Image 1 (tube, one colour):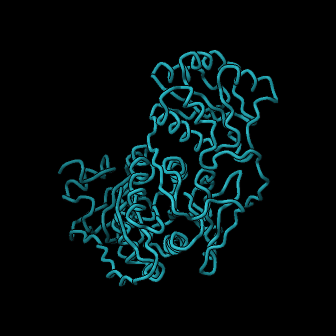
Image 2 (tube, rainbow, N blue to C red):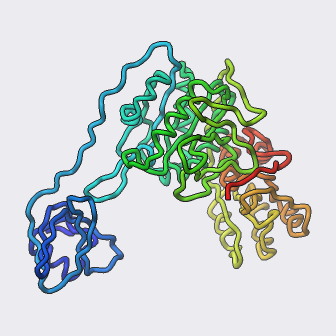
Image 3 (cartoon, helix red, strand yellow):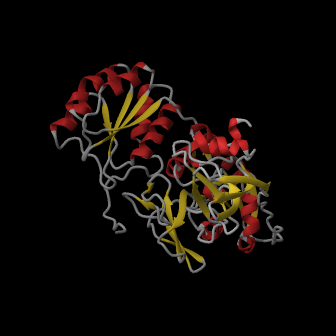
Length: 443
């Protein structure tokens, strides 16, 4: 019996399972005293205790059974893994707008493994269309799988690929584009695409879900109907992110791609527009504009600038921050550092020498605030003025995540440090506001 058949099991419990020739995924009968339990043997978390056997019963519930000397386990069958068979695709209706759904993975393109209880990437955007047939009444859907990864694995190479695929779909005549994406890093990707593909003629809308599409509480279908409708009919031509506005299903809000942040780990309204106004809202079957100023649909040729410099770091300042971190990045050849400073944009004076060293080494540096709302102002206090004197650019009201992406993009699309600095300070996709507006926040 090889170790991989019993992940997480150790000690006497492992010896018992090995002797019974039982592995994870087998259907077992477990006898303890006068009680008998049947179910599928599940894996254990590696750092959990070694005294509990875990099975999934036919009811769907997982139970733990503590080890004892009278515990007996018998294999009674092989686990039958569930298979997902989507219904046939609805017929295409001629005359409707053409919307391309580009899948990159994430929860919205995931389903539950009911043997282990885990969620894994499995469903393509074509699958999503087959289980949300209402989309066929809104647009002619073309499903396209670009990646199949969770958002933690998305990086700048994926951003480059997304921009290239979006340009291809526009050239092929799409009237709107939807990109399905995991929520955890979707804000980075929307910022990247806002910069990487400019002069858009149509909407490019990112969408995700907080719960996988085969859960009864999933928000994926509601999100998809709304964003496909907006991609087909909304008047704007920008990169945006569409997700639930509140806890109910009555409205979907569209956030500007360079001003959106995930502010809640699990709520449906996880995403919020920061230091700006949302673009639009989908409610009662139609999209209503919120923003007074936006880029309208138009006959234009998209411009691709999809190169990103990887040697850029985002550093959050905190008490006892060690300046050696900055020196280490400089010595490792990093070309850019974005600081997430306190309040108006400060770090400790203990960092001054390291920052001067970075400036002399030609490292591009920028300052953002770790406050969610507001902007940096490095002229108010002497600490801010000392930092600007040492080459740190104040990045106004840009989100730290957006600033990180913007610096990668600026360095990737310039030939000289001076050009990169100019691009960093240029308002390319609404990532800056000349004046931070007052906006109400959800309690």
